[in-house]
Image 1 (spheres, rainbow, N blue to C red):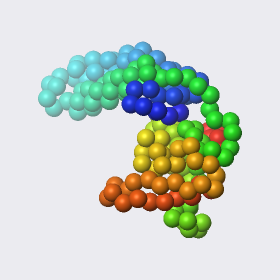
Image 2 (tube, rainbow, N blue to C red; image 1 turned 180 degrees about the horizontal axis):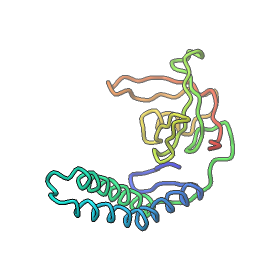
Image 3 (spheres, rainbow, N blue to C red; image 1 turned 180 degrees about the vertical axis):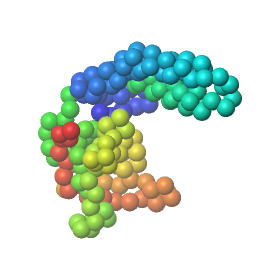
Image 4 (cartoon, rainbow, N blue to C red; image 1 turned 90 degrees about the vertical axis):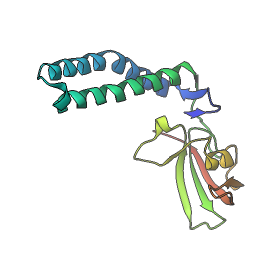
Length: 165
């Protein structure tokens, strides 16, 4: 999954379905649950000193923010296929790079939207400086990207394979 512009997000069908299911849960059963928690906490009395009430309201705020994020994301989503070929850096690929030509100083990451981020593999957005620099490059090619301090960094693409989840 990746964002190719500010408003369009490319998703695999699987990712789209997963995010849609999360939105449906948060918009339905989860809203009912949090409303019940708030109502129960209100019955406990003074709301100024009611920790359960404040915690439930905070949880509700986070939940509603996620609903808005998912709604916007899915409204602007384009469903496509995950990459099936190896050797070219594209959204949805696991990329292995070597820094400044040093084949011992390597990093492996998933080039995808943060919605795909997991603890299993580091994720970089295609809009990040590194993502922009490596996008479309083939294994064996060099890429440059801009560092936060304005300097340029060079990397060599060592591998690019479709993400298997």
